[in-house]
Amino acid sequence: YVDIVKVTNISDAISKLKRIAKEGKFGADGDLVLYNAVFEKQVYEKYIEGKLGKKDQHRGIDWGYSTSYTCGLKMAVNTKLNELYIYWEYYNKGKLTKELFKELEPLKEGGKIIYADSASAQTIADFYDAGYNIDGATKGNGSVEYHEQLLRSFSRIVIDIDRCPHTKEEAEECVYKKDKNGDIQAGRYNIDPHSFDAMSYGLEEYEYITKRSLLFKTISVALTFLLIRNS
Image (tube, rainbow, N blue to C red; front, side, top):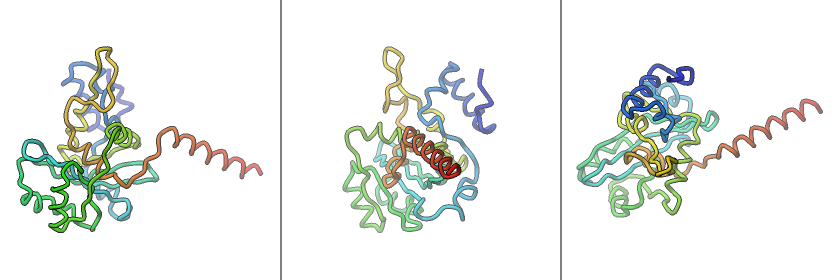
């Protein structure tokens, strides 16, 4: 059965049931990479507008070139609540660089630096010359697993249903691949989630706290409070 108590709203419940139906097994939902993703309307208006500042805003691009999808995202992080908000997306393929200059223009709003897949230095240089405040994201050994844990470290990833349909779809469908023993393989998925990469690149300047560190920090604050109160 589906434990509806753990589902935050009706939209989440429907999404989970769709996943189970598609995979043909009730355990499928437990293999979701972004188990912390939820879906709402008017995300910018509810969580960002008038509440978060420019420093909390992030921009990311995953290049798709001619055969795959280019994904651009506008995001924001509420560090106090440890929540990531995805409120605008660009998702298309088969576009020339000159076409992308125009179609990705909303990412220029506010002057925030855009971090993109560094695999194409020439594309980044072309966008820079076209007036984009853009740089390549850091990539290296272990970066896939690092970015995976970064995204999974958020209490919630709130994705706008209407404005980010492809990001929502990938969050609903992306599950871990498993080895011959049935064990989950970190960094290996059933689909190529372009939005996950765009999220990861865009969070280049964000330093996340591991769940263990967050627990220790919470305990430390609580103990300090108790000591002060009892002194």
